[in-house]
Amino acid sequence: MAVGALFIATTGVWVSFADASPGTASVYRCLLALPFLVLLAIWKSRGEGVPSRRQLGRAAAAGVLFSGDMLLWTQAITEVGAGLTAVLVNLQVVFVPALAWIVDNESVPRRYLIAVPVVLLGVIFTSGVIEGGGAGAEPLRGTVHATMASLCYSGFLFLLRSGGRGGLTMRTYVVVIASATVASMFLGAVWRGVDLTPGWGTLGWLLLVAVCGQVLGWLLVAMCLPHLPSHTGALLLLLTPVGALALGALVLAERPTPLQLFGSALILISVLIVTSRRATPGVER
Image (cartoon, rainbow, N blue to C red):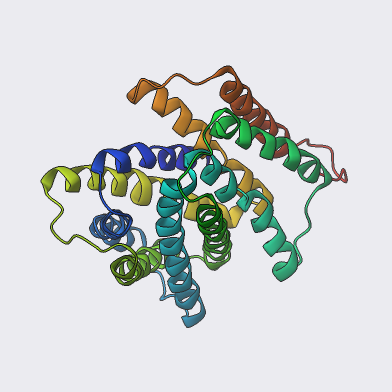
């Protein structure tokens, strides 16, 4: 799960290099991943059954929500800045366990509830919003779009996790990405347009996004989420902004501030504390 989160962390850099519209990036990062995923599904799912209608419906709905998250997140960055957008989108650390509690009656351990404020503070520091990362041309619209992206993201994660419980994760994940491709085509056309011929350079970067994000990153997440408590999965995905900060320093020669490094340390420490388990039976975790 942690490795998947770190692969996802790379996508922001590759998307920035691609210099494509939100709709174009969303369509091609899914479309270019489909051939790899179909081959993996054929190889992995030999002898297995067919997903039920309920599984297929959840997978299709998850794909639509994933598409909405990608488009709204990209739009919010231009309106309110990358810093505040990162903070608002990562409210999934609160929303996903809340959904699991309301829908599945899944309990949340006390140490997670105690860690949530510390984690959110770490996200705020890591995002750089305190040091000017929240600037944007349209702060109100951007805040609304980022919050909507967070809700889409949370719903996507919840459905991705619940949809994989019955097995056949590979096949249902192919449906998720196919649904996201179609939804991005329609939503992107309405939003800011989709360029069907973006050029080889842009396609090359978007292929890298597809491989790192959809084929390696989100596939690992889809395979691991059903086997983890909702709060653990939500917390481990916060390794994404930490990985993005590190990659920005390595690839883009960006220099993290001491406050951003401190925020990353808060996230990492919280992840270690909440996800660590003791062998003592009967102790509430």
